[in-house]
Image (cartoon, rainbow, N blue to C red; front, side):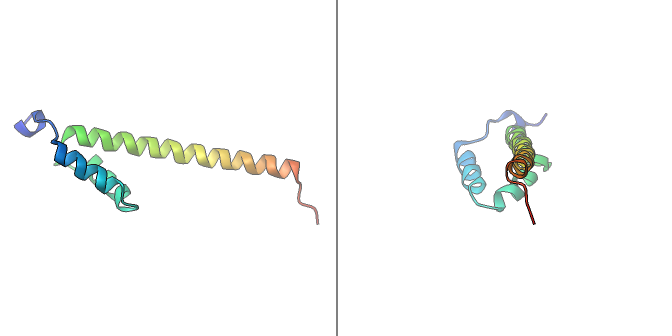
Amino acid sequence: MNETENKPVSVGDWILTIIVLALPLINIIMLFVWGFGGTTHPSKKSYCQAVLILFAIAIGLSILLGIIAMVFGLAIHPHTS
């Protein structure tokens, strides 16, 4: 373990991280860069990996709920020709 891994992430670095993650599309790219990059601080790396896992869960649940909504929507209002 090197010395930078023992140093906490600075407040300024977290502020920059939050600003970058607020930008559409760039945020997803940077989550992958920081989450799987070799030079990223371990704390930031873990945070980005956790956010990506939560994104994947949210997308999966959204797709599942969308499919359920379509099935129930078709059951209630069947398409008639």
